[in-house]
Length: 124
Ligand SMILES: [Zn+2]
Image 1 (tube, rainbow, N blue to C red):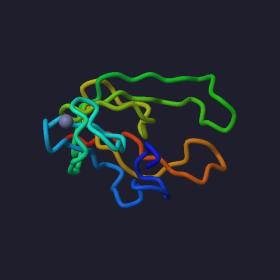
Image 2: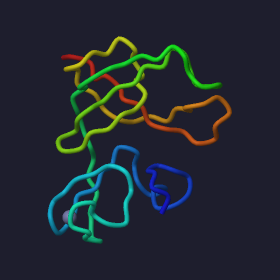
Image 3: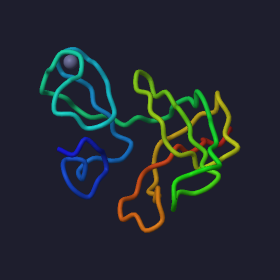
Image 4: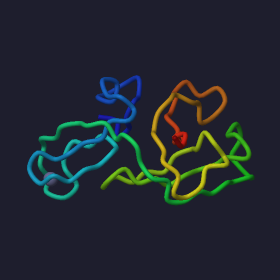
């Protein structure tokens, strides 16, 4: 296992980028691929779609490593018990906005691997 989800290699290849895990033994939920539950050590887990989450915090970095976009908007989002940090598609997104986690974007120019981003959900 690679410890990453949605990669072209490893177990993540079969997973959707928005899929998280729930432990069969204790119900703990997490996002990134793990061989065992971080709480109880159980080896059985099933997957489920993250669905819509809530954006908790936003930050924008203007000084970024070579090949990483600048400005680079990052968000911390909560999907039930799962929290994750990722690039934001919409730099104008604000805490409290509803978001999904998906798509396939390059973190760095020339990077073969693509990563999902947090995407603001349009208000009805
Ligand atoms: Zn567990």
